[in-house]
Length: 72
Picture (tube, helix red, strand yellow):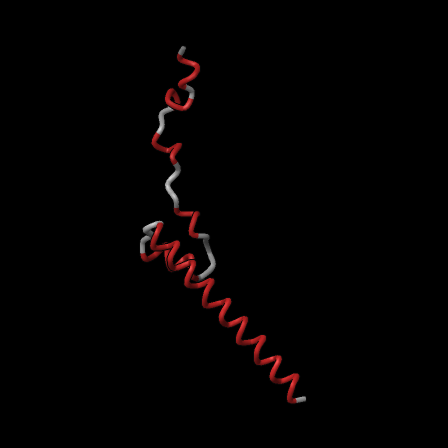
């Protein structure tokens, strides 16, 4: 029973380390994407992914810009 408990403890420690590493990566991604506080809270709560708050490049383009090859 002692060996089983020891192995179970190692597995729990590994899972905790993985969880902490994942949280650290998410925090780094949120900082890199310069999310606002409310956006960070939504990501931490699991409601959204970090990438849900990215600005779309297409929003800055007019329809004519998108179809520039048709202007020839």
